[in-house]
Amino acid sequence: MKNIKDILKHTPLPYDKIKTQRCLILITSCLPIHIKNNISYMYLKGETLHFATKHPAINFELYQKLADIKMILKAIQLKKRCLSIKITNIKAYTTYKKEKTPSKISTDIKFYIQKLNGNFENKAKNKKITQKFEEIREIIKNKN
Image (cartoon, rainbow, N blue to C red; front, side):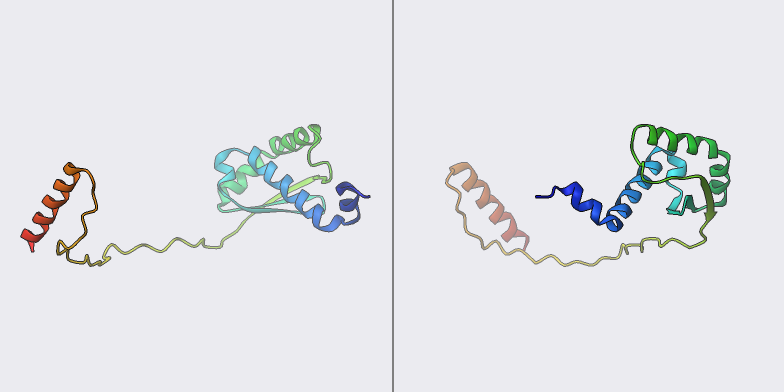
């Protein structure tokens, strides 16, 4: 009987994509927060890692920190993670797609509350609670 590793060796295509995606997520988690938040997406084409940034300044900063990113990649591979991918080149470009902003919720929400008439069943067994319910019933009937 085959185990799962043997089965996955014979179906490399979907599993390789999952491995690659996990490695890209791992790489992004190692980046500084201000860079990580401004990356639209990233993908691997051949041996080149492509970053799509939201702003040209982040694009420039990625090129400035190219040595740090390559050092992160080496550190990840030294821990025997992401061994299946080889990254020799890193490129970054800016996407000029306007991101969708959530639509504003209107503050003019109209709602109607049903008028109370004081007709409810008092099922309380405790005398104090029964008295409180009767007081509430009297207050409701007096307001109408």
